[in-house]
Length: 253
Image 1 (cartoon, rainbow, N blue to C red):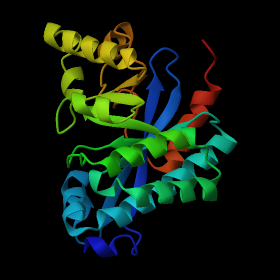
Image 2 (cartoon, one colour):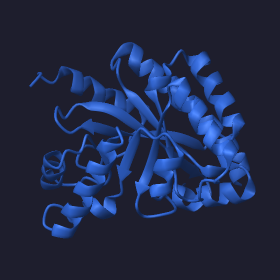
Image 3 (cartoon, rainbow, N blue to C red):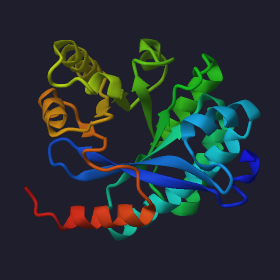
């Protein structure tokens, strides 16, 4: 059923806003896969992505998602948000030479600047510790594409990732954000992650921000970017366009 989802037009991308912690402006969008099947209804990524990985279909889905996200954000940058950055999740199974070729093609076809694209390395499978994967990461970075490590500290990602790959952004998992600001341990861990990332010239994004108190605490700790339901759920391109329009119309601080 999943292999036919692309051809049937059942897969779409939704976009969740990423917010500057200081200005509270929408500066980025994470592209998130959605699958709506006539028989199964709405199927969550947590259900179908592992299946796609095991069946070898994830590469097809991933290539489609990368192109669609580049097309959409290139349009937004032209008409309404010239500095918007799009983040797209990339699994370890996609991380090879063909990924570099496909991204180069996407950028050429859409006219999107490489610096406007960020690849988030997901943790459903460990990144292969091979010279080829490191070489691909280096080539993408040289091209100008940003690399981020998603859900840091909760899965396969470890400090070794920071040493092996040239990363630009560290995304703090919602697990560490949920208990802010009341948990001393969460504050200490979050501060340590932010300080470490900044020492490595990386920016930091906090995921799962749901309350104003969490946002304030993260800003005080020096977190650069915020993402979560407090600022908006993943929405359709049309709804996200409205959000960007509201963002542009908001008076400057």
